[in-house]
Length: 471
Image (cartoon, rainbow, N blue to C red; front, top):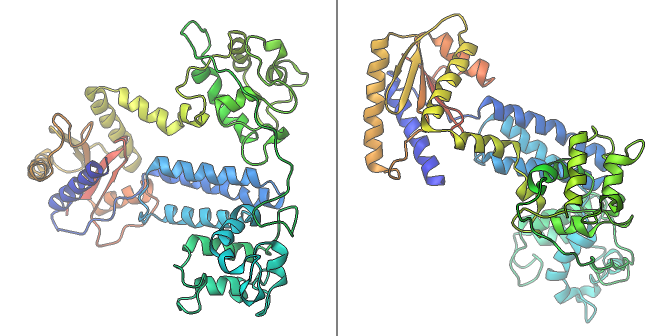
């Protein structure tokens, strides 16, 4: 997939270079406006991370960060993308991640245990420094205390880990720790070097918290096709998108968390969440359908009555599972908005996709020049449109097809696969002002004087166009 996307980007660049008469440099393909808008929305949500952290709602803060990271993976934005909105987003995401408190027990202790206890354990600790307990660390050794709360640059623990000098660096005689591990320790110190265990004299990373009871065994009954309600289609979407916001993570609301179907059936401490075949005994039905007032979901819009009734019917019919793996994350069976859109596009025939491209191109042009209609020329692989003569568009389209044929010889596509699904639109403007409007209106950016063309192509070809000034 990466090769074909690279090939198509190469085609676009070559076409722009050949079609723009003055051989002006082409800017890097930028992000489409809908993606930039989504990044802006994600940045607004990331601002809530600080609010949740101050309220000690760390799990909610982590969920926001995870949502942002998952969405970026789905968008498949190259890490070296220079778009200003994306650069700002990456900075805010990193800042939000740094706000999350670092756990000594779960994050720092494993690093110290794996790398420091060989020399600073209980038996014959070097420099009289024991690091096998938290009290041993804060007590220090012959060379003082290795941790200065809120001052990682003055903490010997970090300084020695990060030292470029092999003689000074710790662990002695070993490879340098990964930068991510050093940063974890440094962030923990910067945040105050706090202890989140229960016994400072216990071995590090072995908290004395009360052990949880093992989850009760459950029997998962797979769907047989006789059901009138589908878990995958009718119940899982709102469970994932609404309920799991509070009922997942390390500190789920009401001590009931679930991310898989099996965990959902196991239920929580308040009783039997779901009793297959018995909706009247299922606590979740009470919460979303029968209590006055309804208590779930909290702080959000209530479920539709049809959704709550579908849940009741699904339980009455036996709470059957129509997914593939009851141990897999429920998120895997609930498509995101982007996945739904991609699936809709995938269902289109080539003719429908080509018609959609022309309609989309008309809508884009209307935003750029609403009062002026241009000429159009359609070829096998391209749809040329612009405020130049039809003869000029034909000339440019012939150049484009010729270059495409030459490139296809060097980088063959699988048999029957077009270079651009639904064709590639090429907008051609006679006036410099009209070309700059593509950048101003659609990209919200200025156009450098040396730039006369650019391309925008999304991964699923939902949007695919070149804009150029016919110099």
